[in-house]
Length: 114
Length: 112
Image 1 (cartoon, rainbow over the protein chains, first blue to last red):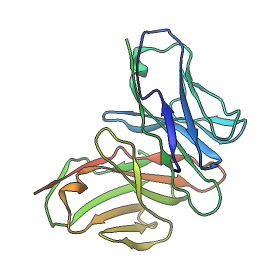
Image 2: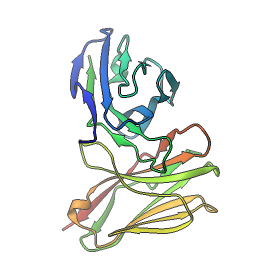
Image 3: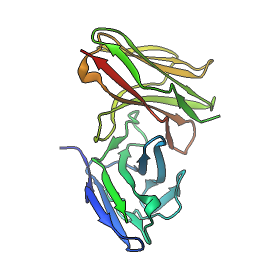
Image 4: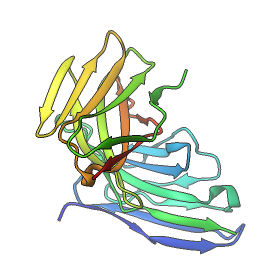
């Protein structure tokens, strides 16, 4: 089944404790992206990647890191989480060519930073 | 001006009515337009995309694009309670940067 998976789905942590949220897709998509969704602010892009070893900042990259060492994986790293990073996070992927620009979203990771 | 703007909601319509959701965008170079639906607590899922001016129909859904006026809309005919969700408009600019920009979304409630 074609899908985007994220782990963990729910996470409670404390300020300053490094964490990683994994994202994996099995559709051979070149493009992958991380978003955060907050009430009243909508979906905002954190980082995106157009292929292996190619990443770039989105609208709200502060406090986050990403890497793209393999095509299928795009982990989101919070080196020193703070309470303002409490949010719902979505990973998404899509093709870059071929006419289908649909972004497929993972199930989301709900993060609470105390 | 916000890059992608949607009507402030929520929008409430009776079952069987037409729901009209509107979205405007600021960048005239935008080339791809998407409507996503998001149920509470779930991830967004694509309903329709449109690239050319005019209407595009898929079942009960019609997307309308007017590049001159920089708006894209989604009509839902014969609205059902199962259509109750948040609808997100998304716009992709032309060029090598494939960034997709989302509006804040509008919540639709269909009353039985």
